[in-house]
Length: 277
Image 1 (cartoon, rainbow, N blue to C red):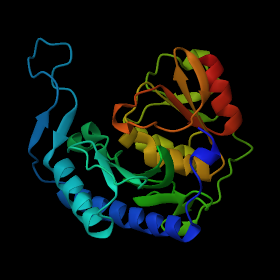
Image 2 (cartoon, rainbow, N blue to C red):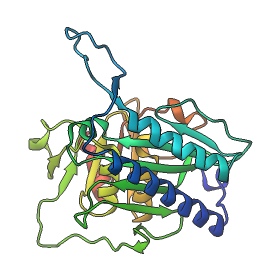
Image 3 (cartoon, rainbow, N blue to C red):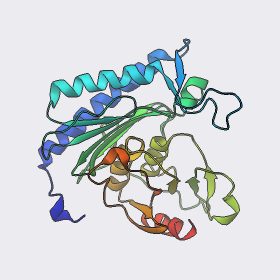
Image 4 (cartoon, rainbow, N blue to C red):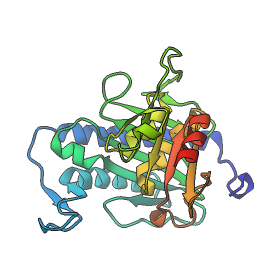
């Protein structure tokens, strides 16, 4: 996909979308925080047969559904012609050439329901399949508190409405990498971490906490907002098709069905991680 296939939207419109994405991420965070400490209704998307290898996997809480409902209602008020792709509900189709919002109400639900404070709410905006805006509310951040990383195409990476300057400590000789599996540490130049949330790892790459992160087969709602953040800080994203890695060019015409290996990171680190994949 070339730039001529996806012309830039006006800067004022991008900023409006970013402000809305931040508003939605803030709403999601408030709903999530209000649910902490109480017993939640939980269902599982996979087999509940205890003898099944995938028993009790992929949980969904009542909060996931409530957060997505709140977000969809607000988007319907503001942008009724826009599309919505969410993890928990059916797609809302977009009018011709209108943006599509990719919503993950809670990324890291398994962490959330177990009380492990590593989860996020991710809002991404796509135009012709490419991320143009991202806002990710994270339960913990570089500031040691919850907050929202956000950006739009051509704009700075921000944290809670303040521009965020990213720069690693040059005294740190071995940086961190997000990995879906932790048994590759000996093959890599990074110390590896697994948070259980693709949205958090994308945001942490953008914020400079991780140098690179790899995902096996994320959904569009897991990473759409995060890719926009990484792009804003000058990072890179690569995807793999048939074992060949190439620069990420968008989620295509059918974002819901997109499932490809993905690497995001500082340009040099992301490129090096593709060589080791």
